[in-house]
Length: 156
Image (cartoon, rainbow, N blue to C red; front, top):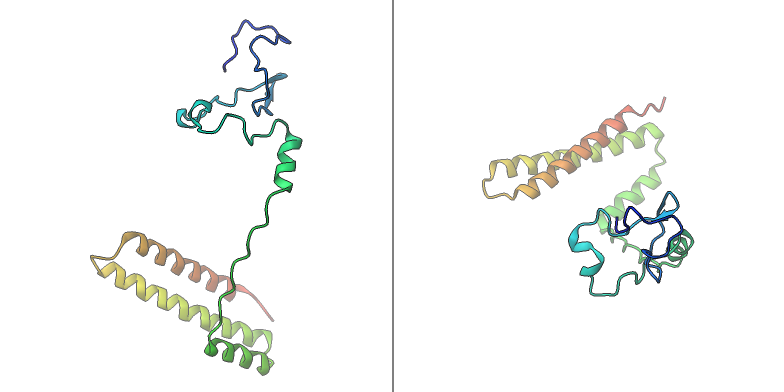
């Protein structure tokens, strides 16, 4: 901490003259915002003056969070004509829950097999990127888990 150990409680000598974004306290005294911070992140390293945009109280922090700008929505993926045709057909069929489960399982198995084949091809390819192999493997594992969960649903 930046305060000396011989400072008396209530002493104003070691405290800054203006608020520095201190809203954490221990034993009634503000904590040093630079305590435990990596040197590159310390107050003296910022180009902007320290404390700009840092709330001085929990109430100010909550007010900042309430006034955050709206985030743009993710754009929806456009469905191909084939996908729309299959979805329309499924809607028209009036399938039971068990039949819908079988359709879903078939689609998940199809995706899982595709991912497994890509992973196997990448394992056999010495020029394949390791990061891509990991990504495809993780997705294959997710599809496997999704299939296992879907198979465990008892609809009878």
